[in-house]
Image 1 (tube, rainbow, N blue to C red):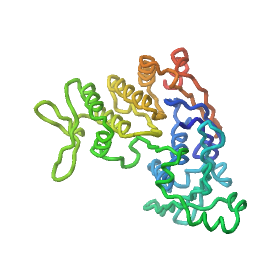
Image 2 (image 1 turned 30 degrees about the vertical axis):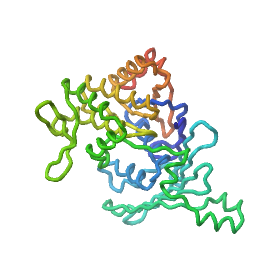
Image 3 (image 1 turned 180 degrees about the horizontal axis):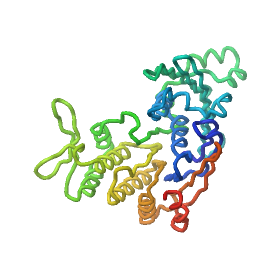
Image 4 (image 1 turned 180 degrees about the vertical axis):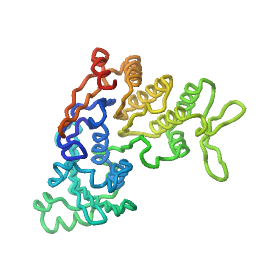
Length: 357
């Protein structure tokens, strides 16, 4: 589990740190208070495909010309950006350093990452050309510190033994990570459903569908014109999930994303969007069920209803000690946070409401 992250020079955050992240961490605060940037920093730092992660974070800023120029904080751009994440067991598990170069018609971002206990650094290079295309590649390289400490022969052996992506995923210090917010083309619902069924969670999904729809129903992946389409199946008919309304579709996507996750970290950006209060309560149950399975969930939200639902569900399950609310504030690039434990959140509701209202 990630317990802390420090961010220097990413987007609007010139400097900041957030400590004592909980299994369920909820980030609240006014607009432009650093919440989304914290998610971006975590995604870049922990992802096993940093080229994709950086591309994802850049592409999330729509209607901005050459958005790669704005990934790094403009005030500290000359020094680049540094992100470190820690699991609470000592040294940072990962430290990422990003630099940006701007050319007449293109931008280049290079991210070098040191991984604790591995004699390699990962290098991700991205070339953004005139807002139209991006090329990226991720490679490994021997870190400078290791070069200085090993013999020439040892260095040659290390060069022949570069880690592959699967080895990185299996490292005890790395976690699978995903963001659910629809910024880029997400996985298809049928694909998520298949992964959930493979993990033995079909009954769990069926219970969520029935509760959300208020009647007995299930999910099935049916074929239309040779393509799999996920349907809500009732006793005597079925309907594609896409015609059930955005609130139901977003709830089912959330449930399937979490059910398809066997381990790791999931980040949710404003999961309450389009949702009715009753559906928000279902979302809270889905989120707490994932936390119960040791999935770390980090959420940004502007919804007091969602926070109330999470607190209520956590209290009913005896899981308040696994929840923390962080109030965020960004002043002239300096990120400030205050932590409210789950047990204290009910007494601090007015402070939280001030950030949301």
